[in-house]
Image 1 (cartoon, rainbow, N blue to C red):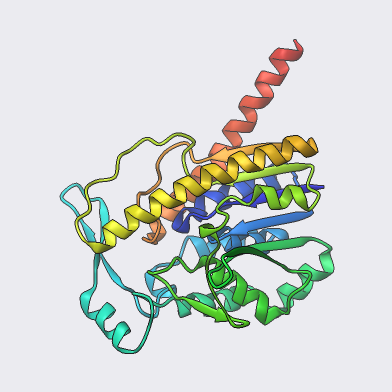
Image 2 (tube, helix red, strand yellow):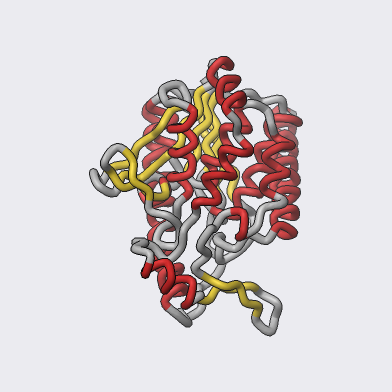
Length: 305
């Protein structure tokens, strides 16, 4: 059984979409199971249906206004033209006065998910025989959960996709079935092990980070940058643990894993959704997958020769 796993990574999901497009359209790969975390959860339902152009349009046209109904930060440019975030004090204060537990709210993203992935799409997915799994973190029970397209109603599945993307405390903290849920990346940023345990024998894994860390974070300038650096540190640790555990599980079951990392640092803040950059990242993901597979084919030919 062949599986596709896509990690979390916010706006960098555009790169993952480009990689997946090459694997599916140019290499003709078909997946029985697709597993996503956070931004990966947004991609995998559409990829399962081969609706690549549709999800590409979403990723290359979205901005902050399409995701946040309460955006807790403002985007600033430094003297070198690089973008960074700073706290929007009035927006955050108003949100707290309304009784919110988080700095911002991402309810617009929930509407976008339902608008772009319709009930008809969900019925097509269930009829296809393919299984799509999205990762969520159950904060109440301290456990990672995987929600399957084969087991949920349409409304519930859309809820789980949304919850998988909620990078708290910047986005919404959601409640369902008496529990609080947040971004799946807090539990499993790269859910390889789940794919292996569900029977996958060949797995393509798209990781929206470089294989080696190439930069040092700048000193924290405000509470948001501090939290962003802290979250980045935790996610980096979780990612490496997930990969190590996934490799071990694959070795035990003799499953094959093909890794696709980002070859360069795309951004140091994946909460900034710049549609122009995301267009470039989608193309670079496609081109990178092409380059990597052509290089592997050349090595294979040389070995056989």
